[in-house]
Image (cartoon, helix red, strand yellow):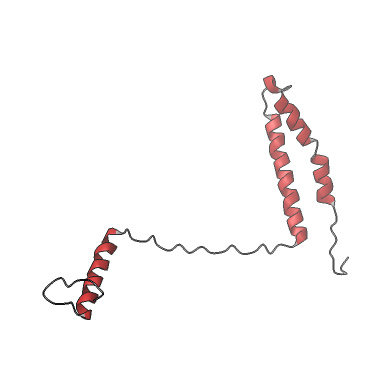
Length: 114
């Protein structure tokens, strides 16, 4: 006859087998660490800026960076006036006229609003 051998003098009933199963599950569940709490991550809202506003923000970022590089160049000690760092900063600062051209650029408005 298939199935496990009885543990006592008679075979266990369905209720006894279910109770034993629940007890085994409860014992093994105590050994397993608890699951970490669920973390809910919210999506960031999409950028709703227009293209001309994105352009203006990007060009302003470039201008701000050039200002920081110019500060850095002005604060260099005299021992580094002819160094590779000073030359690299001078090369970057030569781009200021291009950034000014970018700021002055007139962007198309599109959709017949030109």
